[in-house]
Amino acid sequence: MNSGIDEAASISNSFLFSPILHGEDATRLPEFAAIVPSASAGKYWRTLRHLHASQLFYLVSHRILRSNKLSRWPEAPVRLKDLQSQPQMAEWDPMVARQIIENADVRFLEQHEENLCDTSWRGREIKRRQIFHANYCDFLNVDLSASKDSELLGRAIRMALSWRDQNPRGDEIGWGQFFLSLRIVNWLKFLTRNAKRAEQVVERAEMDQLLASLRAQVLSLESRLERELLANHFFKNAKALVFAGTLLQTPESNRWRSLGEKLLREQIAEQILPDGGHIERSPMYHAWVLDDLLDLHHLFEACPPVTAECASDISKGVERMASYLNLIVHPDGEIPLLNDSQLQVTRATAEILSDAGTCNDSRRDGIAVNVFPESGYATLRDNTSESFLIFDCGPLGPDYQPGHGHSDFLSYELTLHGQRVIVDTGVSSYEPGEERHYERSTAAHNTVRVDGTEQAEIWGAFRVGRRPKVSPIHAGSVDGCEFVRGSHLGYKHLGVDHSRIIIRLAENFWLFADTLLGRGNHKVESFIHLHPDVRLLPFKKIETSSSETMTPRFVLEFKGWRYSFSSFGDGTLTETRAWYSPGFATRLPQSVIHWELEGRLPVTMLYALTPEGTPPIHVGKLDGHHRLEINHVLFPT
Image 1 (tube, rainbow, N blue to C red):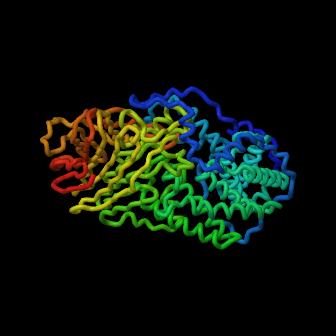
Image 2: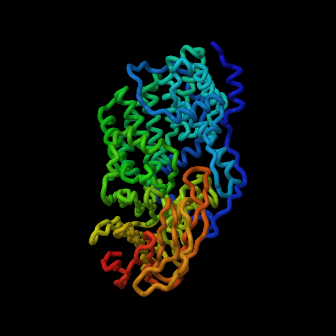
């Protein structure tokens, strides 16, 4: 057998385990982007006052006790437990994983993308993403147990050993708790799949070194659980402890397993809301936590937990979260990009739902309205035309951890005929700065901004000071027209209340009405972000509308369809440019309809999307801005 010393050295020189390097970001912001707010004592107070006392304690103690000396844990025997059956867990992308292992290079993660705007910033973001994935080691979550993969398996083991060699102190980036949580699980998946074959491929000493490093990583994680952050990070900490306690035989195994199962049960009760949504209100993190639950479910099928209640809680959590996810996906089968969400971070949604045993009943004929009261979302699905709307009227997230929340109250996404038409901006970067601030800002979402002020006091990369209250979402049907409506108090400090109703009329007409109540003069702006595949064309002949019909302003063209964009109300509508970020390090140019008006409140602004050539929408008298008459049907505003 080959000891692999020379190969390990070459891998060490080429693999990306180095610290992140910061550099200039030359990305140009949209012309209407806000300036990044600076921190102040008041802002710190409005942020910290929402934290649990325990979070403040652990925040301070972890900052003071930064030391992570690996020498404090004496050596102890460690081996893999013998399992009667192997847990049947999904692999990470096998083709990409094999490329990475073959070349010892995580650059195979990145796909070439055409038509990116402002690409000068991209290298730094890609480098960071590569370093993160190198430290996650998710590419090791692959089955290499076949005899034809012997050489690849040896390289994979030496790549894991190269991580140990390049991170010897315990204070490198890879020793962060989140990195530890993901890497511990990935190494254990790799070992349980490939251990028997590995015994024939590499020296026993190399496997012993790998297992000893794994034990040290679990001990490090256990000593610094992310109790200051909680939410999905803490869930992944608990998952890693359960995996380690279940699959490793060490003096600490029973302690890890018992603690992990206890924390899991607590966090399932805390993080999965009664409507099935995840507490952070991000569809991406929802899918990620659901995938974590599926991993645990498969682990417990092979190795039952200490308490039967833990397995039961996980099975119920899978069922509730999968049902919720099934109902919020677009007709293209993927998640909306609300709050911090990107595509292709988790497994494909269809794979997750299939693994959960959830049949896709969201494709049934007819029109369905679903309200998720605790998450604060509502969906309106028309399967006949493959049209779908998701409406956001929920809080940013839990008050103690709103870091993945955006200023997107009363925003929405809309698919027509299977094409995403009106979209959330998405997220291209988690780094603090103008770009991150813009992507969390009110202007980056399909909602209304008043006096240039953010709905919530977002700052830093993940911080939120002032955060508004929201009303419960209401949904209903009037004369065959479905609607959803909600309101928020994000502008209460300006003396302004904002409410919105979205109505689906017959023939796939979609109407959006914003009512702003208050006194005095105010500047009001509405933003409508279009998918890059949607062409925005000026309406050839704009005529002044009568006092009772909406005025066509633009034409939206996509997939052979043409829809008229009409408005009703004062102000100026213009096309501006911004970007759409369906994934990290990706910014695609998009058109934005920007409606601006200044005047005295109260005011109601209406716009609609209707198939080209259909009759204009009739608007009746606004009853004190509390009721709205559309095509002779009254709706509450």
